Each structure stands twice: as C-alpha cells, then as structure tokens.
Image 1 (cartoon, rainbow over the protein chains, first blue to last red):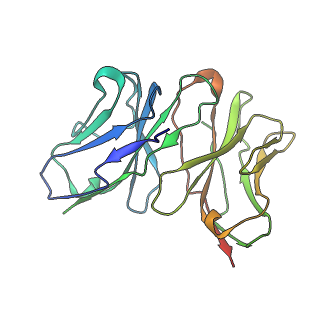
Image 2: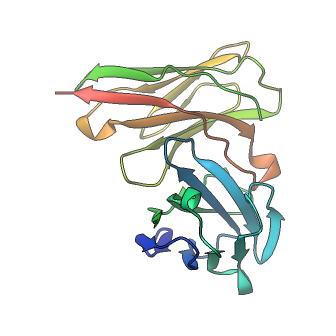
Amino acid sequence: EAGVTQFPSHSVIEKGQTVTLRCDPISGHDNLYWYRRVMGKEIKFLLHFVKESKQDESGMPNNRFLAERTGGTYSTLKVQPAELEDSGVYFCASSQWGGRNEQFFGPGTRLTVL
Amino acid sequence: DAKTTQPPSMDCAEGRAANLPCNHSTISGNEYVYWYRQIHSQGPQYIIHGLKNNETNEMASLIITEDRKSSTLILPHATLRDTAVYYCIVRMGVETSGSRLTFGEGTQLTVNP
C-alpha cells in the first residue's frame, strides 16, 4: 500500500512568487492534515480536511495560504504571494475516520523563499 | 490539548533499552497519550498510544502512571536507526476521530554504537 506522497520534495522560489504544494493521502483516508515546521520552530498544525470539507483551518497563518481538496482525494496548498518567513518544511498527513486515529505523514516539501 | 514536558535530549547505547519520560500533569480523563518520532528529514511516524493501561506493540512499550500524570516510552533494544526526535502528545483519542496533533519540542534521542 502506498503511503502519503507529497510533491515537490523541494521548491525554491523568490519572494512574491506563487507556489503550490500537493499531497496525495493514503487511499480511503477521509482525514487530511497540513502541518509545517518553519526554521527553528516546532511542527505546527495548519488545517484539517474531512473529505472535501475544511474541518479546522484555525492554524492557517494568513490569507496568503489557500488549501483545497476537491473531490476529497488529493489536496493542494497554495502560497501566494510567498514571503521569506514561509520557508520551512510542509508536511501532509492522513488518517482513517474512526479506528485508532493514527496519522500517517508524508516526507514533506521543503520550501525555500529567497 | 494538555501540555507535555520532555527532556530535550537523551543518549542510549545500542542494544540497550531507551526509556523516554514525559510529564503531562494536566491531562484530562478522556485524553490519550500518543508518541510519534521524526527521523531526520522524514515525516513524523506514529509509534504507540494509550489511555491508562500499559501498551506494547512491535515498536515499543508505553507505561502510564496510575494517576496518568506521566508516562514512559520504552524502546527495548535501541538501534542506531532509532536515533530521532521523539514527541509525546496528549490529545483526544479515537472517540473524536480526526483531531490535530500538537507537537512540542520533543526529546532528541541519540543511540550510540
């Protein structure tokens, strides 16, 4: 069974540009989460989808971040326009509804804003 | 979610047991203790979780004190591949499926040859 996949693995962009990160959860997982770790800080929650609906987006830092999950499968996280402080590693995780609620994480996307 | 306190770093000799402590004195009755780890440059990985009874799986054992104010994650025979940051997280468990993980700073475990 394939795990959570994220694309790209690395992205280097200039301040003011737009970047879109993609996450493919484990098939059948209704819950999808985005987290990020910015330099020197702890891993922080960004938002949570249940299928295509945003269940909790309280961790989104500002309106430059837009997450979507059309059709309840893969998700995208767009940063527009990117700022220097957005640099970090963005993780996606998925879990089944019910069960032991174990979250499976992807390898992350390392974003560098110059 | 209740706050947790972990030592910032620990060392362990390869082949020996690694015992990682966690304090969670404000845990509420319906909150579980979860452990995750992050090996360098990878995404966090689930290890184990428990409510009040001790738990064991193929990766580790979790010992929760009777008052539930602290717990210990035990890796019975640590290997070099167990070098990672270990996170103790207290959160609502399976009854409220789909809730965020709140990561602290964790414990950097270094397994030495």
